[in-house]
Image (cartoon, rainbow, N blue to C red; front, side):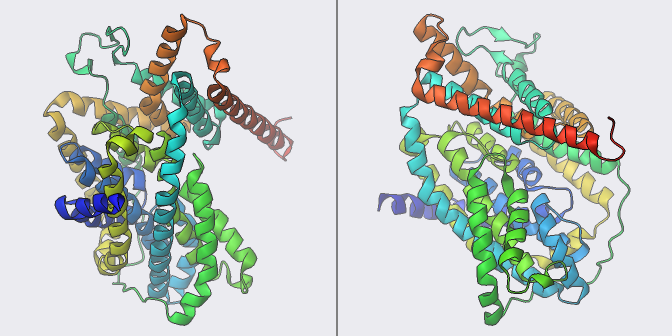
Length: 500
């Protein structure tokens, strides 16, 4: 009953409910813009949460994640341009239904399936998070150090492309995290006489720069695509008979979303395509897939919206975000001095249960808002790109400047954006860099504490059973990923046209 009390108090004594509704609206609009992913949509809001109370701030960011996962399906169905990576699976059959004059029905199926998946994901989040967090009570400083190493190794090894690039990005993040005051000796490091750097480089500046500014730089260099969808569109909700048909693919998608969301590095994109394939495997009408099947929309939409809830499980339990979006949410928690893990449940239960109640409001309001907001979302999709990019740039700069009212922060954001742009060109993943940044203190501080407690003996990391298990797991992830990359390289060399 105490948990219900915290949840009810958050809804009635704080603006958490309004933050949930506002986050869903912003998420749908941001997700509907091709190229503006959920993480970028959340990053744009991050500066404005700096002065908010913790509960509405966290609810706002999490609700934006929920709204953006649905919003990405709007351009995917209407113009075959996924607003988010996870919506790419929806675009396959969604656009086929649109060409058949059934675009409104496709949007309705996407909305209903998204709400279904979101509620399943929230239920799993509530059930799984606290028991997993209690396991962390047994962690010692060596175990926390090994946990941070495991988080970096998992994300780096699952990064698209090269393992080496993922590890390099993670190391760069760790290097950025060392700027400022030494956590043990109190000596300033790498500040180069700039007093603004004594407190370190804030997560918010790096995240906004590498996610949002770099994407805008990429978009600015692309020719504007002409959209063929100019007429208004209304949602047509599925009938009872259709809902009965969609039950199986929705359950398949939610089941896969539950598993994939709890796995660091998997994310909504993998879950959506796996759900698409499994729904086709178990469908009574597999021949319709690729030609406008309603089941092919229900499965991936249920999957990626379930991931929006279950991806918070490892982040809240251990402080290890499994996707770019949860990394942004972790940054929001750290900005307000909230460290995920078991102590968060003990010291700030109001924040946890406030987040749960806010997500419930967000998922329920998504159904209503998804119907009401379709017209402005379609209008927004059809706006000229230069106007949209200019407006987003203005939003970024005004938000960052409002934090400390200093131009120094703007320079850091632009520098981070330039670095992110170069990383995009060279194919480096962002998530290991962000993880290195947010886990840098956890890794360094617990490494130093472990050595202080043992007089400099490194054996403590293998004598502690939890630490040893985590380090061995990290080693297996890295070795397995290295072997996978080597196998892929050999296969490419054997293919026609490859070098022998």
